[in-house]
Every structure is written in C-alpha cells, then in structure tokens.
Image 1 (cartoon, rainbow, N blue to C red):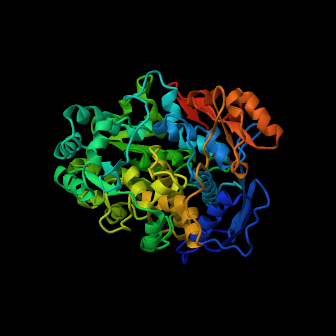
Image 2: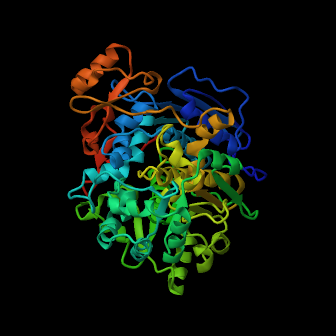
Image 3: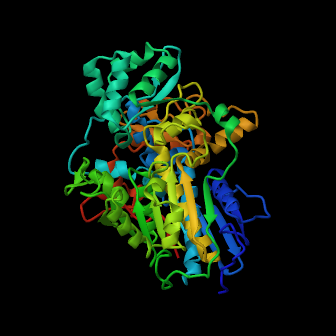
Length: 591
C-alpha cells in the first residue's frame, strides 16, 4: 500500500472520494461530515434502500466500505421512531412526563451517522498504521443503546438512585411568559437565587437534590412552589436574581433565532501545528484494533469528555484517566455495582487511572511527563482553565510536538457572552428545546442530556480525524469539538426546513407512542399520521399483531431498561462487566 502521508493537506480526507446511498436521516449526516473533512463525491446520494451503504477510497488507502442497518432480525427497529421506542430512549426522555415520549429530532439517526464516520476514520487510521480494515458495519439499534448506556447501567445496578425518579423538571416560566433554564453547580447559589425571589425555605431545600441529579436521572420532581415563585416574577427580575446569587438563567431561544446567527461552521475544528519530520505512530498488527498502541490521556468530567475517551478505548487506545487527589468523586455516586457507580462504569470502564493535583506545580510536572509519551490529551475543563494552568495546546506541544490536543468544550468560543456550557443551557440557547418537541408543545430541553452524549461521540470523531491528519502530515493537531457543535448537527434538519420556508417543528403529536392494555407501542414515522384506534383494549402483543397484520411497522416500547439485556431484539449487544454492571458490546464491526 502506498504511503498515505501528504504534507500539504489541511483536512484528513483530502484526495479521498465516496459514494453513498440509504436513509437520508443517517447517510445524509455521514455524507455531510465526510465532505467537511475533505472527501468529495461526484454523485447524488440515493435514498432507495432502507439500509445504508458507502464506499470511500483514495490514493494511498485500500477502499473502505461501510454498511448501516436499523437492526438485525425480526421485530427490531425499522426507522427513527421505532429505534427510539425499542432502545429505551422514549422511556428515558419521557420520565419528566411520567410516560414514554419520543424525541421530535432524529437523535438515533444522528448518533448512528456519527458512529459510522468514526468507523470510517478508524479504518483509514488503522490502514495508515499497518492494519487491514476494509469494512465497517454499524446498527441504529446499537447506537440507540449507546445513547442511554448510563441509564441502562443504572437500572441494572445493585441499589437505587440517589434521588426519586418521578415526573417534573425545568424549564421555568416567568410572569411575562418567558420560558427559561436555570443552572448552577453550587447549592449556595441555588438557595440564594430562590431566597431572593421569596420562595418557601422548605421548597428550596427539597428542590436542590432532584435539580442537582437531573442530568443523571432525566427527571427532576422539583416542588411546584418553585415554579409558582418563578411565575410571579418578570424576566428582568429573574435575571437580576441570577446575577446577584451566582446562578445563571437562559431564555429558551427559538430555531428561527438560532438560524439568524448560525454561520454554518463545522461542528469541530482541526488546527495542525508547525511542520516537522514525520514520526509515525507505532505499527499495529493487522488483526489489532485500529488505535492499538496509542495512548490517550483524559482529564474529563461528567459525560462529554469521559464518553469521548471511552469510545477511543473501545477502538484499542490505552486510556489513562487523570483524576484529582482522592480519585473521581463520581465513582461512588449511586446506584452502584459492587460498590462502584454504575453510571461511572458506563463511561470509564477499562481505563487506567492516575491521581494528579494539577493545581500544584509538582502535579503539572507529573502530567507533562505523561504527555511526553502520549498521542492524545483530551479534556473538557472550563474555558480558560488550561491556559491558566499552563496546560494549553502550545504548552503541551513543547513537550510533545506530535500530540493531538483535544478540547471538548461547551461553546468552542463561537458565541459572545454565552451562558454556562452545560447540556441544558446549550439546549436552551440553541433552539434544541424547540426541536425536540412537536409543534404546539411548550419548548423544553430534554433532561436526557442529549448534547453531552452526542457531544462526547462528536469528540471521538474529532480525535480520530485529528489522528488521521497527524498520520498524513506528521504534525501535531489541536482539535476542538463542542456541545454547540452537537446542537448544530442535531438541529440541522429543522433549520433546513426553516430555510425552505417550511415549519421547522414536526406536526402535533409527532412520535407519541400509543397506549395498550399493558404497555405501549410505537408506529414507524411513515405510518403515524393517523394512529390506529382500539389498541388500548389489547395487550401489547396483540396490538403489535394487529398493526403488522395491516402492514403498519411498529414495535413495543421498552419501559424497563434493565430488561434490554434479555430482549431478543438486542441479542449479543448487552453483557456485563467485572463489577456486574450492564455493559454494551463494541458498536462497530471492523473487518
């Protein structure tokens, strides 16, 4: 095979071309990402098949084929709606309502597309390092499970959640009808905000815990007294209370507002460092995973950074997690398996850990020693923290010029004076709260942390693109992805509808599952405009038989995530780790 190194390139897929066909909700996103990474195509994408196929080739690489399916076998998902239903997404997203609800945006399709691009980049990277991968296979039902992997692990844990799972949650509504999100990680700021508004002390105390854990539970049964308190104050008064307390509030922006400020920027940035002699990474045996022999240092917190590194580990990288002295406090967060947080295991199993006090000079020296032998340094620290500590990309490049410095941020510096870069605030600020709800419903960000998950997956894609660019140029790369980028990818179809003069939101009642006598069923999007009557009197099995007998594709809605491990629709996709926690198998097939 010819050498893929090409020192003139600025994008990892320059000189490559592809042809694609299949479901537009998946393959359209794949094609868009490949183009943005430098690949070209001379043919229009065909949507004739329910399965997706893509062929990618270019000088110096053996052609790589990718195939994408909704599921495998009978009874599995056949489109976005049924994938959300079977994969547990409707159950988790619907917790705040007390019943399953579909996400009006194409969340599973987008996640599947990102997985597919990851697989293609990993295959090319593996080839550049001596591997032989020529085929990538992904499945949308597997992607759906990946997006709820934390909730899946938690439901199968030894003990219960840290707080009650019950309906409720933000956003709040002001007296002048402004819907807004509130954010703070500080219980003192939470209490000060509500005290200034005159909320009852008992409601303030009772509200903190469900609010604090809403990102983990996907619901927040906050006392109604707090909603009433917010509803008695004007938006200017609420902003003033936030300013004085240290909390933050963000008005829910519309998709039209987001479209007016959108620049069309890619969801990532790749900035190669200075030219240098090419230092190829260690060769990997043909049978190894494409990232075998590479070292990733991860200093992540919560979901976005840890998930990005976790997926790099699944592709063969040796991931070393940098934790503060005493270890990551989230290791003990309920619910647990064998004494370790099930949710933490879903994001961090298989990683090695080292405790470093990066605030101390000796700790920073220790970190730089690790960087000197690393291929990737990945973090999602608050903006400015890396520079303040002397650990920004320029600082680390002096130690390791060939390093891929990966920053998974909230806003990527693309907005002026943005709010705190957390999942719910980014959803609020970018119109996601509107995109995930059908027309006629009050906008509300999902409590399922859609952007943390999609942002973590996008972070993995960005690192793979940077590593491939490094292979082709011999230069280190600063790579940045963000929750804002994830929001832009997720809302792109809605913004396209808006640009065409159509309603950006889906029709009223879109992706609302149907009640049966003992559960729920979800009908495929193409047949859901006129929901069949009479299903409420039938058991779920008979309701499905009635629907399929009329040629209407439908699936049973998964409401108990722990049962997915025994669900024949997902055979072979769920196992358990050494702690007994439910764990997913690797979401790509690379051959």
